[in-house]
Length: 524
Image 1 (tube, rainbow, N blue to C red):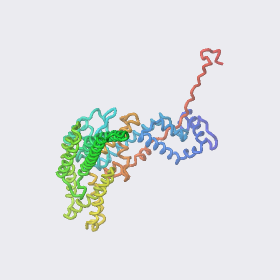
Image 2 (image 1 turned 180 degrees about the vertical axis):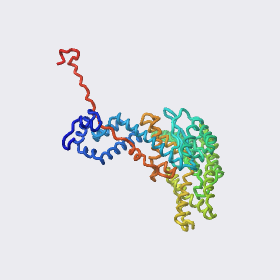
Image 3 (image 1 turned 45 degrees about the vertical axis):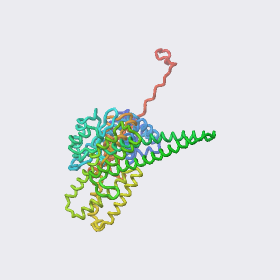
Image 4 (image 1 turned 90 degrees about the vertical axis):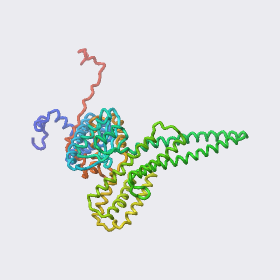
């Protein structure tokens, strides 16, 4: 073909190996693209790469992560006039989304194979729970890093099912479980004690929630009734005063109701203080002085707190249908056991390094409390608890700054011990609220997508582990294995094929009811 001379459709077909009909369609599409101002941009090599990434990023972020349907994505691409450059029908976008999901699963397999060699000897504090949609979804997460070890559908939530799914997942990653935090379901307790041969720690999130519902609910109901009686008595008093009748009885009733309401408010405030005391006690350090605590001391304090809460509850109601107070009391020893488990790990980590008494005291009594309370301040959202943890952090930081070793150690050694303190502060896990948050996210996604497919669930697991980032910019995989994996979107874009070409829809045949097709004489 000579330069400057347009080639025929037949010659272009022979040169490219594309059918003549497709060549004609592509030529017309290119001619139509050139009519728009952005058409020449997308035809350049740089523009094609940018368009390729743009389309895949939109499908990845909105179509997969946000659960936006293919019809809405197709509408978006049409409104920005990209339908002239790529195929963006709903069917095409569904197929493109499926290809992306297949590549994401392949990415996970490749990264797991590389992480297995780096995971030897890593112990995790795991949280387990299940959520229910069309099927049961079993969720197992490393509470420190947020890494999802298991997220799979199942027919039931029995011990055998949990073990058959969780044990291969742990073996595939080379992880071991130090202790398991869960609700008191028998299957989950058995999974820890028999399946993983590790301690089973009750979830303080569920325990305190059940206790709050019973203890706090009795005050709210009683206060509501008393306040309603106060309004009625005040109305009767005003009516009697307007009529000039005696009001001594109503005034005594109002005084009695006011005293009852004041007592209720006092007891309610006391119960809230005790509930906060229950959660602030369950730490390896005391809140007031940041001194080391033992499981025995925590058991004693929690026992006294629950006993006083039970007395307040009995003063206003004798009903306890859920037996929450008795249930919490039975779980106090297991709740407190996490304190000693954590301290055993800290002491074991220090035995590997020869330390003098002063340095060991500085690490345990000064460095560790400061970094522990710092993490609690960052994690806590409740204003009252956050203020209490902030005060403990300020006191611990001040004590650390005034210790001689804090200013005499070499910067490298100081940084090393700071990293050690941060690591062990994160290993204290007493609640599986992160798993509950994941269950809530799955519920929202299930609602938006009108169901959770078996293909979509592993894709969302991969995205959670390697794509979602915390405020510090780290992913769950990076926090667990110590190295950042390749960017998921970059990896997928580099392996995706070319974008689908646009197709011109066949025009719909217009009905002609006045022409009778079966009569040859009327066809002309």
